[in-house]
Length: 611
Ligand code: ATP
Image 1 (tube, rainbow, N blue to C red):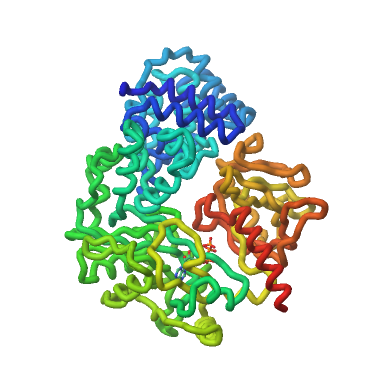
Image 2 (cartoon, rainbow, N blue to C red):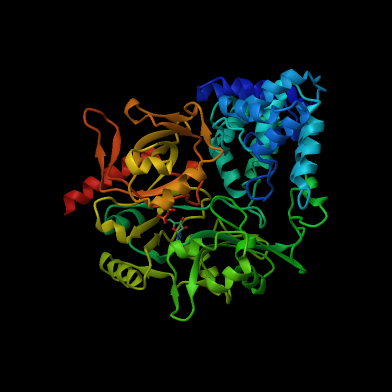
């Protein structure tokens, strides 16, 4: 298949932008993917998600809109132009539209660059860092602009500034891939399984395009978990009562403490082991002089730590890396929760304290003041063998044989056979300061990214009416009145995820639970996300329309007094929602879904009845 031009890609981007229909987006993308070769389709998959690499590789453009405005001023070289460009940017509300507007004036001739060439240029920008990097990046971008049409310049600018947003996420792309193969969502399950085991969207894409249906099925079946590439985290269900645990899981269950920290997958493997060398991004990464995926420690082994959001956090927790290196095994993947640890009183720190370690700078000092422990609760891979398909009971036994130390520890999993016993273990665990327990069915494989009743959480908070906290996606905000108006934000509009059509349904405004400082910071965290009109993938009823729309990106946790049914309507709302935590370590599609809230509503009714 011939290589595609960047100009053709931009036409498709333009079509995507002008449709509000999710089905039409899938259809536009799937017919386009059908015409692409393996390499181009991988590149497109990353770009559409605003990246040049999968989520688990830390590579960013680090080029701001301000730099673009200033560069344009230099290129246009007319007195007072910079201010004009800044003004135009504010008027149009978007850096891409600004570029399109001014590049029209420059009358550059499009050089018909191929997507592959653009990808190479983007890598050059990503790889330029250190002193003088802004000037160097300016040089690369200015040269490129000369070869771009106004439309190409628009999307190029959005890619580099990280504001290319169509409301397309990995799940949308998996739908698209299914359509490429057979014109419907029929193979989504197989695609989900493969992506769950190997969370590199470009790689999964390469198994689909330019293949027959039979080949795709075979390819997807063959995808196995592999240290170095994150596995989607297994998720946990909630129930209304302790009795329900046994109704669902059988007579005998496994119980573990529920640690309240940061989900962390610990991967150890021999350097250079990563199999899929054909991945389009790997050749660029490997040719780097110093920071390759396989470097960092003078050692035969590599250790990587990933969050449930697929972010590489290896640099943040060096003590966990050292302890993983010290485990006398050649390769493994552990599922764990990282928590701050006070060794003097032998107690875990609060979630808020632990989160202070979630940063890339000053790690040495932070390591001293807030040391962490990774509490391993599952194992998916050991000494080159994928054990994720063994039953939970067996995996826990294998985990128990692993000799760990230092900053890696594991809790004792206990077997429980009655509600009374479960209450006892629960109370004992909560008395130790934990949030509750996780109950696991003995039989059942590790299902990546899946939430079902084989893993159930029982939390302290179950004593209230609402059976769990709720994770909302911020989709807008209102200015607020009185003193609050000076803080920039008065209340945040939160939305639930609707997995049926991949949209976000606004449900309520949250203005309680924020300190003034937090509100100010919230305002800052929206920088770059503010958009002029309602994003395509957001649904809202009139009464909730906010003063300002923001692109769905940030997930925040709230508690509420109860879930209520809106008067005269069939939709649900939250009564007195209040903020518990801003900026959760979660992707937007991992927020509480409409279906989950409906199921929580049913559980709430059960809890009410039982009281
Ligand atoms: P969600 O319901 O979306 O998973 P959440 O992030 O608020 O939301 P919690 O209610 O805290 O999740 O419960 C699930 C999380 O508990 C897991 O994602 C994991 O990070 C953590 N966890 C702590 N201990 C365990 C354990 N022993 N087994 C599994 N998960 C555990």
